[in-house]
Length: 365
Ligand SMILES: C[S@@+](CC[C@H](N)C(=O)[O-])C[C@H]1O[C@@H](n2cnc3c(N)ncnc32)[C@H](O)[C@@H]1O
View: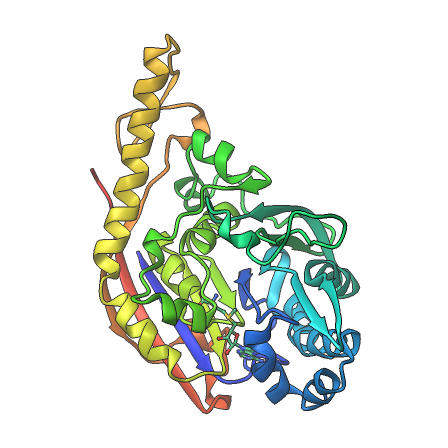
């Protein structure tokens, strides 16, 4: 199996380089409005943002920042196939502007924007990193009534492009090979994720993670497995250090990204150096977790009716019988002048772009 991965260094507002129906899934995490680390990015996109913040008008700054994101959201329904899914990772912001503290509900504002652009909201996911510390309440006293709750969760907002689900040809092999395990379904399709770990983050330093606002690898990896099949292309218009492309490589899907900051491509290059090992270890971990699940179920006296065709171990449902995991075998820089890309991207319009081609082989143990 082959996949392709492209990065356009440039502005995602308008998504001008992308053809209609170019992608089947969007997974992204935009800069968060009203979170201070993104003030400069929003100020560069619209200088009125700076004026609003300096004059203490938080509500106006919030609206101006969302207006910039909306220039991307407005084009997504065009570039995403009918029934395709868009997953937006976003956190709300708490902040004092002009001497008054409040919460800025980014998730609510984004839901409003997507509905306006023809998307249908689907049940969302809340996630939070495991935390164990009382220090987060430092500075907050023990006396009522003027302390505030600490925001620790983020949202993954899920939207469908249009009213109807995506149509796939019945019995398509690539759909059944892309199945997930029954027990993964039970975990991934829960509306609350408290088990998202950071280990596969593969970003060297905490400082870089904070500077880039990268999300944990597990987030795009799960979403890609949940909402796309082999052969699909995943778009991240706010690509950052390319966690979505890394997850797409590991999951065996094509990917496309837009990023304003050219230096993040070097970070991505470092991250993909170990993608062969990463994809093997992620796939093998899933198989090993499944074997543990099988043992535990048998120990509790429950049996299985179905068997995996490629792996020979028991599975819960007939839909899992063809499930096949792949690992990256080879990754090389490619060219955009291939027919496959030309149907989807007019990268000639971009100042700078980067293209990769990967081959994947089945994980057989
Ligand atoms: C929250 S970060 C994304 C982090 C990413 N998910 C990762 O794991 O590294 C948002 C990114 O969007 C980029 N960005 C902001 N506005 C943009 C625009 N109009 N076009 C392209 N990229 C943009 C920023 O430079 C930043 O890297």
